[in-house]
Image (cartoon, rainbow over all chains, first blue to last red; front, side, top):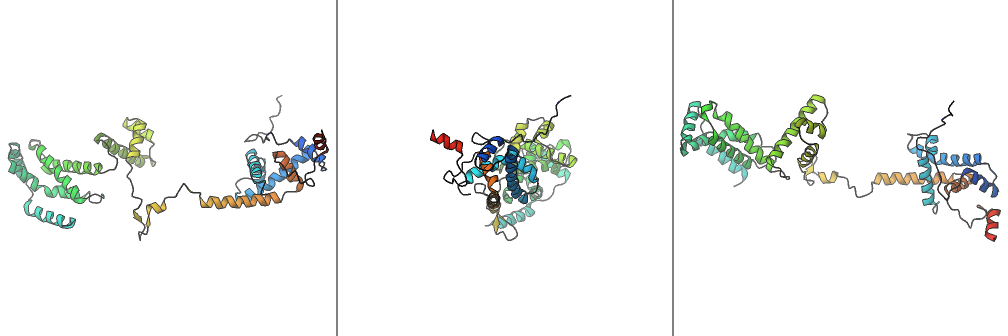
Length: 90
Length: 251
């Protein structure tokens, strides 16, 4: 019996560049900063933040759902670029 | 003397000299012309000037000087007189109208900004005909490849001729009922930013800032760590240095 294929995302998976951290590393870092959390919680916080960004876009252009957009690696990459560019003014 | 006066005088002169010929008269004059009688030749030309004018009238609305069109029609008429063969038994007008039309059409085609050899102009005419017939039959215009296949030409040749046969337009030409605007006014300037896009972009950026400010402290910190965005290292209250980092710094 073959292994289950699992969910396949249309546009691949989001990755982080060299400076970014994985969820496990984020959980460790946050715990050290006095905000204890597990890696699943780190992921939940990340997805919650992405949904907030996605909602603003979906309000303007409701062609895609908030969940679809928030999970889209291209959107995540765009948000990363946006925050990096805007971090001085934010 | 303006154009209208010239034309009026031409009409008057023509009505004075030209009388329609009967079939027998045509035959007789053609025979004489063949034997070198110049007066017979002139009589044939003069008698058919009205025919040339009638055909020229069909090309009046072609943005070309009507006097030139009439002149070209007359040149075609002269060619027809010189080449008319009375032995074939046709009326002269049947034969002459082809020469008159050909002469006028060649003149009009030569007025194009892009000069084409006669063969290419003929091919353009065939391309246009094929496209028109194809559209009538199938309801859509054919591609260049389809036209090329029908005509037995290469697709590249058809494509090049189609580009070349486009009629140039004066962008300063007034349009609209009052003529207050020109075609140039309607052409977008692609070198400048689209204002509506700029406004949309501003709205999106504002929304993104709002979304960013709505993040909880944990969400923001996770996001920054995930994306590797540097934090304000002087804000130790919000981003405290971990014991591990302090140990590293002390080494």
